[in-house]
Image (cartoon, rainbow, N blue to C red; front, side, top):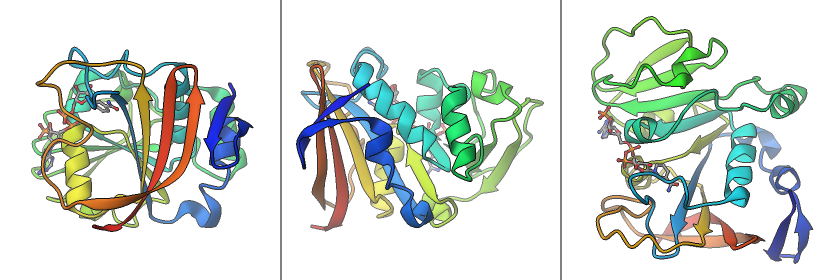
Length: 235
Ligand SMILES: NC(=O)c1ccc[n+]([C@@H]2O[C@H](COP(=O)([O-])OP(=O)(O)OC[C@H]3O[C@@H](n4cnc5c(N)ncnc54)[C@H](OP(=O)(O)O)[C@@H]3O)[C@@H](O)[C@H]2O)c1
């Protein structure tokens, strides 16, 4: 798939080309957030994010996972979206191994009470490592995936723990990342849709200190716009 880069240096470009430099220096301690929103700023339509983005968003979503050491997900999202093996494509897994990375990124989940949807496909894959940050550690059911508990009350425990940590939301988890001042970059797809649901959250649910963003790129695929920002500083 080819994206049309509108800024900087307009022209055709693929996602692997775009992300090739992301891990320069091992990507030490880099925390990225990838979200999709409707043009009226909603992160969910009918309770989920499916249907907001299209093929361009799905491609960037998969390619970001392919360059991440770990993928952070909130329990609300795990319940609402289908989560299985994070990198499904054997070609992308082979690319990771060739680059000296683990074949599968670690799934990092955030839950207070370990009340997780253990039946999710994510837990059924023996090669898919899972770390759960939880306030109250407890027994872990027998699942195929190797599960490690990380008792902690704050996401601050993740600082510097992984090379590239990719957060996939949801909005409540995003607020926590921003409140902790942990976010380095935001990848945001604007799907060609108006959500219209006044009760649906935006990409961040809750208050946090304002921050300035620097625009790194603007891509277009069909009617979708894909934006990449660096979090510059506290405003
Ligand atoms: N548009 C997008 O790109 C996008 C991306 C992701 C998700 N979504 C949508 O967003 C919705 C889910 O988002 P959400 O905001 O409801 O949930 P979320 O951010 O995915 O997860 C929130 C969870 O974090 C845990 N948590 C909250 N406070 C905590 C604390 N202090 N310590 C430890 N854990 C804590 C809780 O888990 P426990 O209940 O287990 O304690 C809570 O359920 C879904 O509808 C999903 O489809 C959209």
